[in-house]
Length: 163
Ligand SMILES: [Fe+2]
Image 1 (cartoon, rainbow, N blue to C red):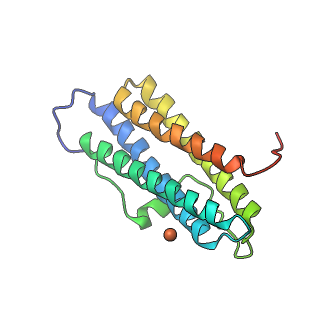
Image 2 (image 1 turned 30 degrees about the vertical axis):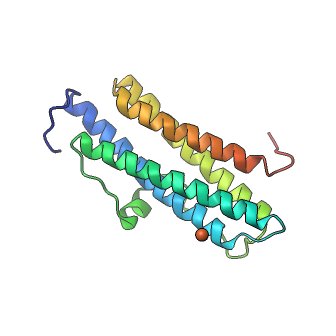
Image 3 (image 1 turned 180 degrees about the horizontal axis):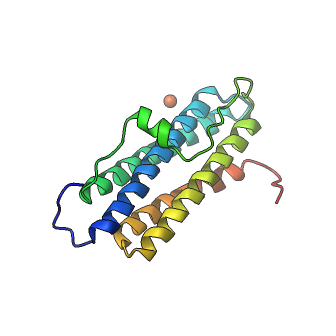
């Protein structure tokens, strides 16, 4: 870890850097899946979803940058390559089958992955709130709010959701 004047105890900074690197990995994974859907989705309402997914991708990239810069601000080293992200992503490694081209299949797949990413971020917020790293917890809360919003925007495309 790099030295910093930040008064957070080194042990807390270490914990936060791990959570932030995991978040970078998860969000890069999510970003690629969003783009995969943006490129391959087909259906009568194609253009709406195609454009919406680009907004998701832009927001996700911004959050990757914020999480990565928070990790370095706390004295950490960012594991920000795609190779590292694939290795460390906590999202299920399931790849979308090539046969998925229908609107509903993409929406369900992306909704699953958003819910999973949100769950991981929520765990990180709890951990870092308990450790009193309120700056990182706040940053992650913003990420979580965006993931929850995007999940809703996806689920709103589906008529009936099983609970
Ligand atoms: Fe595009």
